[in-house]
Image (cartoon, rainbow, N blue to C red; front, side, top):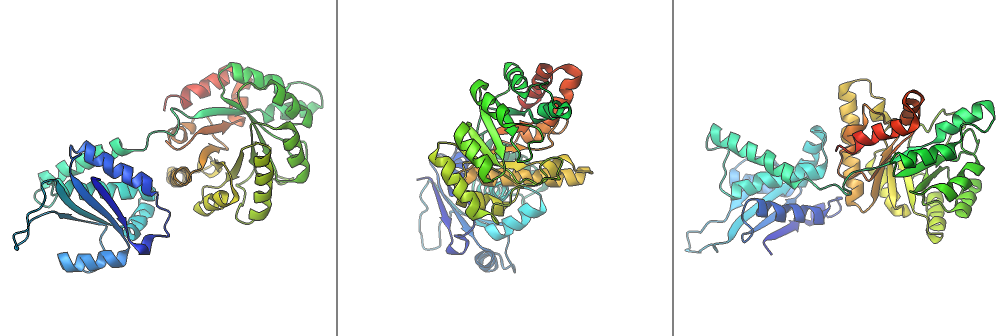
Length: 392
C-alpha cells in the first residue's frame, strides 16, 4: 500500500472522514507521478506535534505540518528506493486554522497534506523566494485537482408551489391551482415539487397533497411539522419523501431550522414510522455540526440546510461567513453519510455559489420563482432558474 494513514489515539473521537483523507493522499501521489512510492501521513494532536517540533526543529509549541524525507543514516542503513518519508499533521492546529480561514477542516487538512508531500517530493519554500512561489503555485493547482467531485453531476432543482396556493387562499376560490402549477414546473424541467402542509392550512390543503401525489411525475417532497395529524396524512399519501420542519403559527414563513437535538426522541419515532412505510426523511436544520450529528443519530436519510441567514446577510462579510458555514456543514453531512439538500431564501442572484457546492444534491426554491413568474410566466421563471443552477 503506497499510503499509510495513521491516527493517534488522542484524535480518535474527532469527526474525520478517514476514507476521504486516504483517497486524497493516494490521488496526490498519482498527481505527483509517485504512484509506486510509499509514504506515511500521521495525524496528531497539538501535544504530540509540539514534542516533535521541539525534538527535531528545536522550536517550542505545535506547528501545523512537518515533513521527514526518508534518508539514510550514519549506521549505513539504505533507504528503499520507493520510500518517500513521513508527513505529520496536527489536527488541533488545522481545526483552528480552518475556523480562522473560514473553510472546512478537511479542506485545511488537504492543504497541509499537499504542503507536506511536496516537501517529500523535493520542494522547499525556504530555499529561495522563487522556490517558495513555485511551491505555492503547485499547491494551489494540486488542491483544485483534489477537490471532491460533485455528489451528483449537477444539483437537482425542486420548486415549492406553496405561494401559488397562498394567492388562491387570499380569495378563497379555486384559482390559481398549485396542482396545475406543479405540472407546469415539471414541463419546464423542474426535478421535483415541494409543498408544505401546515397545521393552520394557510396555503396548501389536504386536497392539494392528495392530487399532487397522483399527478407529480418527478418527485414529491412533503414539508411538514412533526405533529400527529400531519404525520398520519403523510403515511396515508406516501410522498416520495418528507421534510420535517419547525412550525410557528404566527410566522410568515419557516424562520429557522429544526432543533433535532432537543426533539431527538420525537423525531426518531417519526423517522421510524416513515421508514417502515418506505418514506425517506429529510430534516430541515440550521448549518450546525451538532444538528448534523443529531440527524444521524435520529436515522435521517437527508438533511436540508437552512440558507436563510446567507440569503438575508446585510454585508459581504456576513454573507461570506454564512456561506462558509453552509459549505463546512454540507461537507460534514455528506462525509457522515447523509444526503444534503439546501433551501430557504435562495433567488436568482444568490443561488449560484450554493448550487456550486459539490456536496449539495438538491435545491428547494419557491418564493423567488413564483415571484418571477408573475412577470415572465411560470415556465420561463423555472427555466431561468435552471439555467443558473445547471451552469455550475
